[in-house]
Length: 153
Image 1: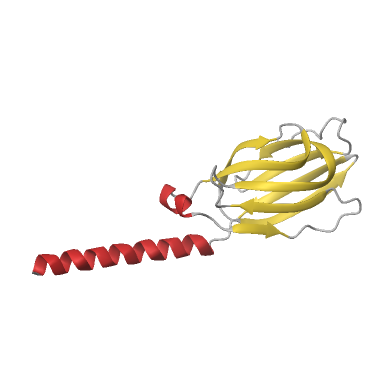
Image 2: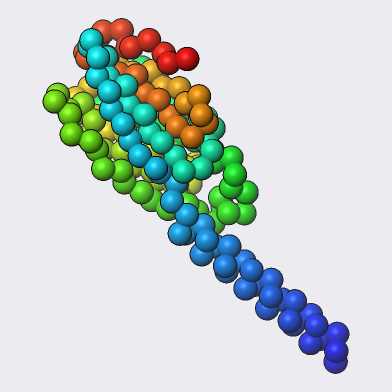
């Protein structure tokens, strides 16, 4: 009888901890900010994260009107990641010649979390991991055919 009570209490505690961790993940914000800097025909967009992330890949590779950047949150375990991360939208700072339309984080996508970056027109770009491991840096050329800005070091 005592064994059944302990087993039942352990199950209840386990389910409670699981429920609390799922609630924690749902409340966790991933995106911090977006900054846009334009200089001499190049625009650099920096998307900041609240958590350390690793750049995985992006598509399309060189140009387009929409860019998907796949990332992996470093400090989030597999169970939390499987439970799903929030879907977030960042406010875009005003620009003189706007190139950025929207930045959306899809935290619960089947293929893993990614950023969806939409531009006002087709552009050439380069994507890289930020030096701080809390950002993605997108260097954008003024024209689709022009060479993208040099990469940040």
